[in-house]
Image 1 (cartoon, one colour):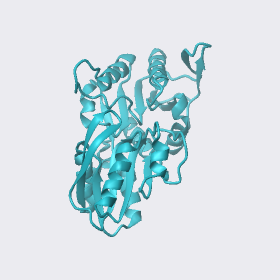
Image 2 (cartoon, helix red, strand yellow):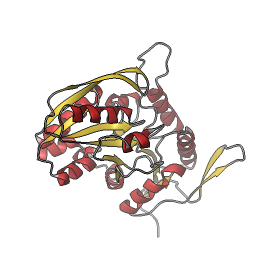
Image 3 (cartoon, helix red, strand yellow):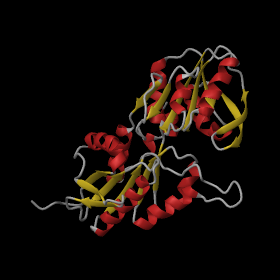
Image 4 (cartoon, helix red, strand yellow):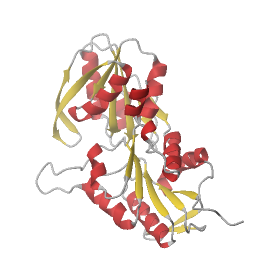
Length: 319
C-alpha cells in the first residue's frame, strides 16, 4: 500500500540509547535501525539500516562528555540529509558546551554558539532540547528551537512531597528567574544563594539572601557538575535554620568528586532527570524520566501543534 505523507522515524546515538528507547516506546513506532560503526582508530561512521527518504527523522543524542557524542550526532545528521529525509530534528536532551555562552573574559570561545553553528551546518532543520544553561542560547540558532522545561517533570514530584513550609532556593543569581516561576506556581517564598567563584568549579564565598528559618527548602538548578555549589548551598541553608534541604537538578553531569560530595552532604536527596546517564550510584540520588515530555514534543512537532502547554508559564495561567 502506498504511504501517504511523511512518517516519523526515531533513531538514537550510542550513549543516549537508554533514553531514546523510552521516548520511542512512548511515541509508538519504536527505535529505527541504525548501526554506528567505529574504525580501529575510533573514527565514527553511522549507517542507517532502513529507508528514511521523505521521512521526519528525529535523532536523539545528548552532547555530554566526551565530545564523540557531539561528533556522532553531527555525522548522523549528515547521513540523514544525504539519505533525502524530509525533515531532520536533533533531539538533544542535554546541550553540551552551554556554559560557554558568552565572552566573559578575554580570548575565550563561545562554545554554545559554535555547537549551534555545527548543528545547523550539518543539516538539522530543528532542535528540541531541555533547560539550556541560558535561555538566550536559542538565539544562537537560525533554525527553530523547542526549549522544554523540566518543571513539567519536577512540579508533580514536589506536589507529592507535600512539604508544609515550602521555600525555593536559587543556588546562584543566574538561576533566580527559573526559581521565581516555580515559586509563583506554588505561591511559595524564594531565597537566593549568592556565590563568588575563584575559578571554574571552585567557590570562594557564598551568602543567603532571604530567611529560611524552619523552612523546607528545595534548591533548583539546571546542571549538577561536581555538586560543590549544591552541597555548599545546602549546608549554608541548614546553618541558617532550614528544617530540610533537597535539590532538583535537570542534568546530572556529576563529574569529579560529585558522588562523594552528595553522599557526605546535608541534602535529603538529589532529584535529577535522565537527560544524562548516571556514572555511579548514591542512596541520595533519584532519577525522573523526561521520556514522556520528549515524546509529546516530538508528536507536536510532527503534527504542527503548539508545545506551549508543556511549559510552566502555561501551567501558571491554567492553575
